[in-house]
Image 1 (cartoon, helix red, strand yellow):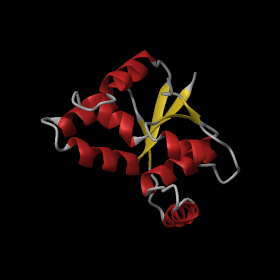
Image 2 (cartoon, one colour):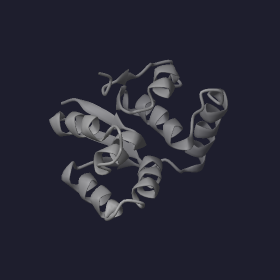
Image 3 (cartoon, rainbow, N blue to C red):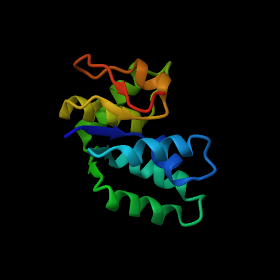
Image 4 (cartoon, one colour):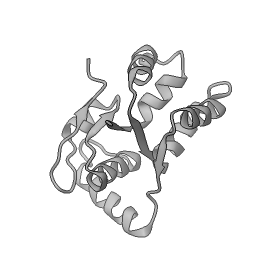
Length: 139
């Protein structure tokens, strides 16, 4: 079964009907039948953004439950250090902490398909083992 990593952008767009990427996110995520995984950093970031939407936090929690979203913890000291190294390496792109955690998770799980709206970033980023990403939401 296929597995996709999911970034903050598609989560927020899926839940926010006013987001310009809403329809595309709904189309992509509703048609996917595999496993969806992310990091707790992405969930925290998404929760912040959807807090501006009426019932946004509840909708995000419901989405996570309904899709059986697998959320990987990413804040152990060694993980923070590895993420900091990546954010420094890609400072010109730039890379935020949530992005760095997804790059590290991809390497750990050998999973490189990602649902993201950050085409520039994830087209540029490479995992510590040099693997590139397949952007599954590209039209």
